[in-house]
Length: 333
Image (tube, helix red, strand yellow):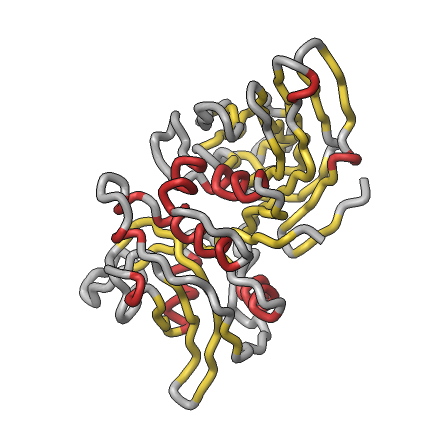
């Protein structure tokens, strides 16, 4: 399989998937993809699902028992039923070797991941309304695979103008729950869209999880609009790469604005304390006053309060607590 590797990423074009056609569905199978000793996997997909069509994305993992060294395949695990015209819903489940929690597949204690195989099933009422699956991406996490210790890097000075949108000024029924789609709206509107946050939020909504923050469903929505969009276990290299390329990114963080709170990393001037939050990184600043990450934090009380600067070291600690999760979105070439 001819895959493009990007740090912890593997991209699979539709043409590289084996197709099995049945009545009212098509099944796409990947080859076995070897990834030694991974802890977590997130699968992203870019697909268009017309009315009366949807897809189910599944994976099984080849694992090794750490005690007896025996290897075996897990059961097939699912990211649920997804489409833009249905009540999409994740399918958290588990077996002895692995589990899926909403958007993340994790290897259970006592096992190590060695390989993965994907299955994507496209369901439709009429062949003319079959889903168009364009690309699938796999990102994997290994222990300390993004550790900053002894890593050499060079920061750059760059700001990428990105619309500032506060989630707190949106529909009050959902305002405190929509950091992910609000940040996604900022990314998409920077690329030329003119989207309303509430519309994006309900297009990303996971009806089983009953939340707006399913990582895979957020990037899948961007993919349905024709963008190349994926979740990545990133790190400092990924951050510098995207800012250098003129691309804002969305990242998952855990932080506190209370200096006495020892549970989460402290960030001066942050708008809240959070056990999980999505923000936009739109620049880096290096000056005599220090190193800063320029962000659009949707938890700002209004649009004017969204643009903030976080100390680089503090930001990295907050990002690390979410295993350096990031959304990357590009216009297709």
